[in-house]
Amino acid sequence: MAIVKIKGLVKRYPMGGQKFTALDHIDLEFGKGEFCGFVGPSGSGKTTLLNVIGALDAPSEGSTVVLNEHVETLSQKKAAGLRNHHIGFIFQTYNLLPVYSVYENVEFPLLLLKIPKEDRKKKVLDALEWVGLMDKIKSKPAQLSGGQCQRVAVARAIVKRPELVLADEPTANLDSENSYNILEMMVKLNKELETTFIFATHDEKVMKYLRRKVHLVDGKVTKDEIIGKGAQ
Amino acid sequence: MLGVKLAYLNLKEAGLRTWLNVAVLSLTFIFIVGYQGLYVGMLKDSSRAMIDEEVAGGQYWHKNYDPYDALTLEDSHGKIPVSLEELINQKKATPILIRQATIYPAGRMQTAQLRGIDPAQTIVTIPLSFLDNNKEELPVLIGTKMAKAKNLHVGDSLIVRWRDTNGTFDAVEGKIVHIMKTQVQTIDSGVLWVPLDRLREMTVMPDEATIVTISQDVSKYESYSGWPFKDQKFLIRDLTEMVKADSVSAKIMYVILLFLGMLAVFDTQILSIFRRRKEIGTLIALGMTRTQVISLFTIEGVFHGVLALVVSAVIGTPLLYLFSLKGMPLPQVTNEYGFALADRIYPVYTAGLVFGTAALVMVIVTIVSFLPTREIAKLKPTEALKGKLA
Image (cartoon, each protein chain N blue to C red):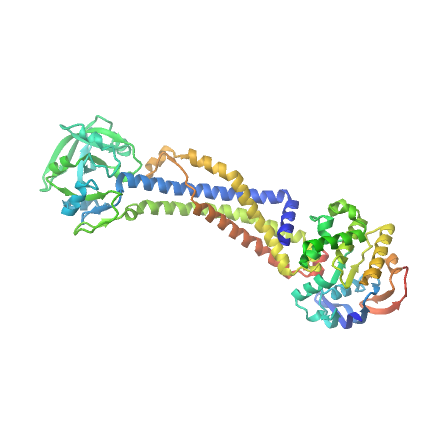
């Protein structure tokens, strides 16, 4: 069953009085439990496509259905609800809330979902155990290494057990070892929780793990490659 | 709750910036309460003095009497109505006869007002017992301002000249028997207090008066033909209006102070939104609505106000309490202001003043905190995540 259906997606931005086409008639579908990614050079439209799927940006043309919701017609409030309930985000620069501890950062999406305290605590501790950060619960992001920060970001993305996790260059700021650890962890989560992971990356290390690679060049899909089991 | 906790942590993280805002707001709050308290204290003290020493429970005025028109004094006298006389006999009212006079202190001619009052009366608290002392010369009681203005001292003699009811001029030598210290200008400046019987005799106005002052114990006032009643509120209206007018000028200072305080909060909010665009983008990506993000930043701004009130309570309470005990001394020059002022003003902080000012500060802080956050509504989450303003 497809959880993301993209048809005729066009995204244009105003640029210097003209319109720049970032995505040009994209047609794609992603099913439940996929571990896939958009690959391509900088400016190829990877992040833009990820943002449209994440209901952070609206398409200029075409339709994007994410978990049965039409992104192009979603109100800001409904888009927030979709992200809140069903989508986890992982960013290149971690985007952790600096004033919160590791525990509080991971707990944050659950607070937005108004999950009861006891249930919340269990979910947060489970997520932190998955990413192996039980000993850093009280630390602030500033006290963590880059790899640890990204693990917190992963825990935050998966703590609410979303159907879809969107990861934008998640290993770009990490060394090889940390990248490996993070990716192994994501693969494990993908298998155990059947969470769909969609990456935007040009990192070879990530590409090795992908079971499906969608190649983008100048906003167009040039190749949709099914790899099988990837590096898993 | 989520917003409150996050707002609190963000403020804590902002450290010195937060405390600078809080300090400015606290000082503004304490200053407003302290300064406004002075006006309340001044009004209260001056009103009390006026009521105790002049107005009491109110006054019946002779129909022709107009305190602002000296020419009306000529005809402002008449027989006291019988039922009002009964009140006087019951010691619940005291008549005062007011006549124009001319005095010659040190040979210089000066206009003055003779006020005859029963030295035994207990309605107003003027030290009238001194008026009984001298039966030969006209005993005269004056206030400190009058004494200073006319260069008179206790024991000084002065010629007092007046016209009786028939228009005949007469004169007598008066003697200053006491100089009373009063902050009520209207019973001091240009006024010579003399025994009522003597003045009635001098002016050939037996049983007559210009005003009849009523005890504060009298709660029901009847109306008498030709003697309109003036209540306390009316009689102290000049003072109330004057304090109100002064209070307006003080309020201009509050507005300037508040403006500075609010500018600090506004600036912090703008800076916060500019510096924390990425955080705003993250919050939206995590599922917060724009309204929730706007609320979060507004709460942060409002917290400045809340913290300022807490700090004001901690620092301001002992400070303002001490101020209310010690009061504020007034320089000698205020004697020339022409209205009732004590040597020292003791501020009075009413619940209305404290809570009203707190509410005002909170309302303004909330508005000022909210205004810049409207920028968030225009922010594109994708741009914000990159740390850009859309």
